[in-house]
Image (cartoon, rainbow, N blue to C red; front, side, top):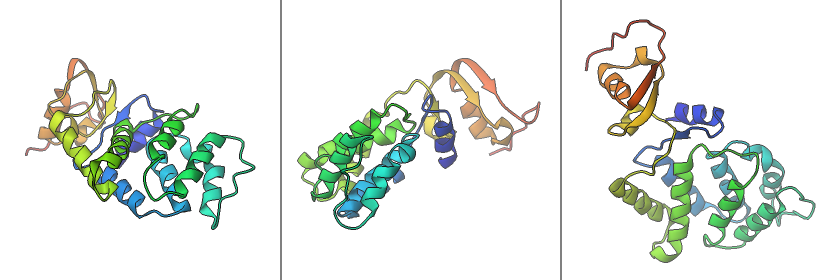
Length: 214
């Protein structure tokens, strides 16, 4: 899945990378948020967004540097993305998740960024909003319930996706591009070849496909 995320990132958000149904990354980040204290709360949320969208590390590098220092961050000299810096400062002074969703929403509005893991970002924002009223002790627990609901009602639809065959089995798209078709076994090749309802592009080092049996 990491290869899918990297590929989607290189395509500047034109394709969305699909998340595993067990939501390891969602739960891992929720646990990090639960454990973070003080200035580290701001650092963690910047790092999370940097895993969902391009250019975040560059756009917020100066702001992140302020929060990596000990003591009260001095953001008085910050001009670029000052609204985000102010929101980050406010969440470092709280022991709850008030303001987290607002910070992520502001980051999404940065002009030069492109979200390529919209599913992960959406579910984290959903969990953050639900946490206050869910009556659960940790964000990790709320995130788990959020993902369980997704398993029940199904994923959100995205027009263009990058995924392993396992995650899109049963789904259908107008066009499908099969990368490295010569490296797939017969089961995964079948799934890949049957995802496109209208057209199909196959990329392979070999002219002939001779997949390994089950």
